[in-house]
Image (cartoon, rainbow, N blue to C red; front, top):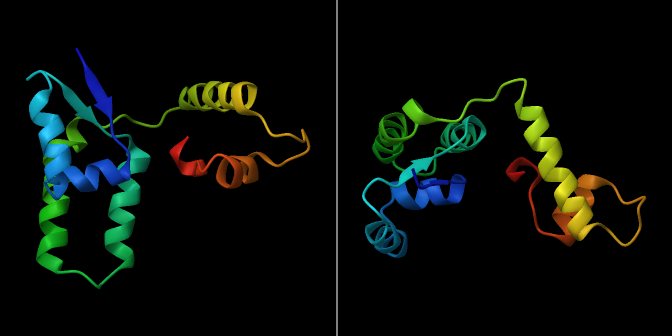
Length: 120
């Protein structure tokens, strides 16, 4: 079954019914799945807990949307997640490693490749 693993910015865009994203969604097969991992859902909820600058009802509606659309099919974090993480990091390092091997992994990801460590 075709599908997409969405990051926090895409979940927010879907929740807010971003016109460009909704156009893309409408062009996909009807059985396309949209999933998020537990970390992505945690980032979204953390944002709601850290801010009081937006409308509480809007935050509550977003949480209800997440709970209905993503929570039942969220990809869990398990002991085997470490292996997937290791494989992804290794592929990035082999394909786009730093010029200096002594460069710290997180620094290379963020500064040189613009990849947030949480997004790995």
